[in-house]
Length: 126
Image (cartoon, rainbow, N blue to C red; front, side):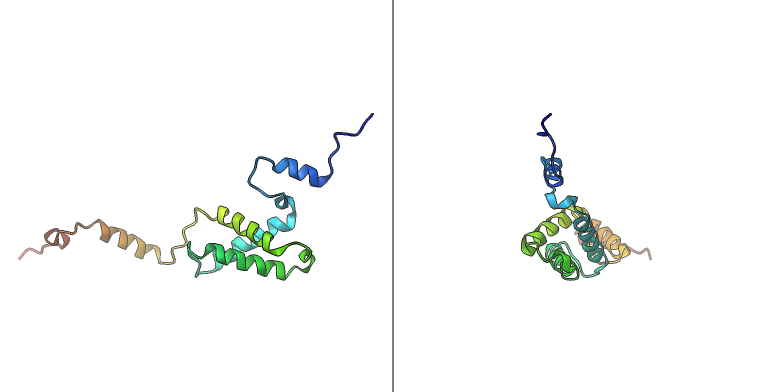
């Protein structure tokens, strides 16, 4: 009996990720741990905005890789880009508005007031 249909773990993970946007690295536990840590650090960072999300994701990914020396044999630049892509996809719907919610609601209500000066202000009765 021939053993043609047996795959090693690398081939299996590649086959499982075919047709998906995930990279073959996503099956490794340290990769998922890295994504989780980077997302946590970004959410804890009170200065994150939608404009600098990718830059912060790359920086936090580099920090994670720096404190885990066992990952030193991997090409860091490509890995950092993959992690940043995954983090951006994970946080694409997150609102990074740093203003208090009451301030946001007040601004939205102010924007609903018509621009006509007579209708803009409340008239007081004498």
